[in-house]
Image 1 (tube, helix red, strand yellow):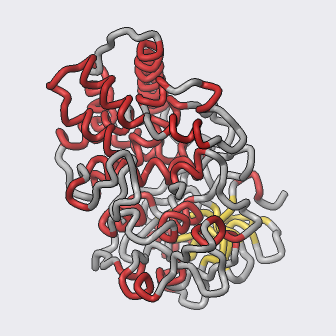
Image 2 (cartoon, helix red, strand yellow):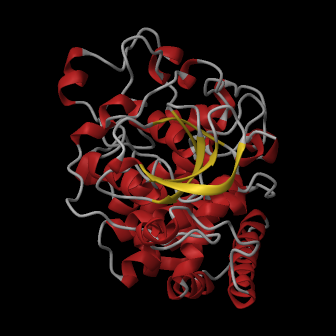
Length: 404
């Protein structure tokens, strides 16, 4: 049976207009689980093996299973929205208009420099691997340390990965995105600086074995043949061999993570089908994030998914594919509705997320931008969904799809 990550590589995820676009009213986390009248990913592709058995309903992974922190965590706002929305409401009753500049000139330079350096680092390594040449990965640890030393870069890279529609997308961009998402998960798990650097390096290089797979297979837009799929499944072993042969025993841990990132919690993965504690924790994080990141970009057969849609696919993908602890961190740290995302409320009004709350991830603070009939408000108005029980999010949209 093909696994979720492999289906995504082949573009075999339902079109957004299809099964996964059922309008879900996100009043509770339980509603992210597949409903009885909703066709989930498993049913869409594996009709003989339903993902919602009686046992799964009792013990399966669901967002309602996760105990969220009792204290809310406020994420600093961006683009001119206030870091203290309540203060703005007290003083003016509105949210200030967006500023034209997101970053200062110095911050922009730092961000661009870091991104380019990460891209060039990966490009050099992948080029060397394809040419059977040796390479050094020491520079990678320095670059990731630079990202950690510039915390704003983590949030900026996160938003770029999710919302940048015209960003050139290739294996290097994918590696960078997986790195930044994985670091955010590691932060949520309480990793120290050394662990975050290790996790980031493994995330950057998790697909290094794909360099040994012919490009016409890796970039194939149609369905893979059985023979081609068998080659794709060799990339963890190829990656392991590349790391060991070029870096030696010093990076045995890295080779192990690269080898295991396609393994799954319940034994559904490959190459060995190991389970639970047998899988390195870094590999568990990267394996989940690899799927999440892939869903956020378009394929010839489907449109890209928004964050809450990608999270729903992962939650409903299959029983025990990912550890509940990891899914909890995915929702907490990456958020179903990240700051900067646009959402539609049950009133049909449209707003932009300006503040998130880990204790209530589906009820962020919204800067209302459009009235229910689609008319742009002259001045954005702040609505804290946590304090307005009659309002809730029913959908999320890309900026390019806002009313004109």
